Image (cartoon, rainbow, N blue to C red; front, top):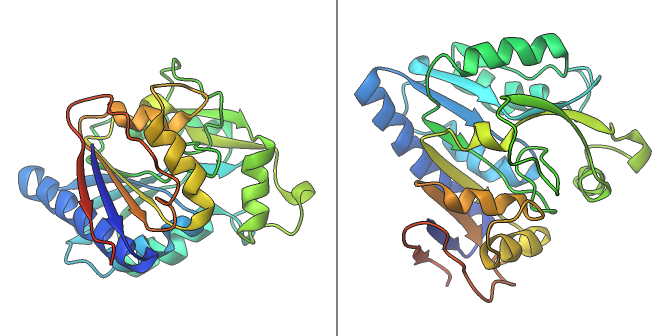
Length: 255
């Protein structure tokens, strides 16, 4: 596990994007193409801003994304399909983008596509309740399906309101289609960009705990190539780091 601590969210985004671009380019050199998974949400703004400007041959990149609300049209401001189209696909011109459309037919199609060959890089955010994708606590660590329908807990739904995607809790869908924890862990490398003070609890709990589905992001610490990018605000509550696999390398760029 590598932990990179920046002073600001802006610097975090730049560093996370540089690492992601390096991994994507490595896959292109080795196999002639790269397959990636992208997160959405306010915490990914800075990283995606820099990633779309990176020196990458995007014509050789295939994109999947993590999750989408059930029964939410792509025209809705909170649609993750809309988010990725506007903030990544339209800006890079990636030729193949696999969106989660929130339907059973969509789950089946995505499962076929994602299992054609390995995913090289997963940009996996961590939610305020330490969820990864929409796998809220207690997350299902056992299922081997690629995507599943999940019920969203109160903390998760409140996060969507706090970030401005919905006006009230009642407006937030109660279900979503989410990539499973197991499928996320199949990525060859995982880059998690987790800035801002509202993520401080999630970061501290992820780093302080042994593996537990009550803190779903602890699973990321069992990955061979997990890179966690935090800023001073999101790292502020960390008092201990429990390593679950290999060694932990810390790079601290705080002023």
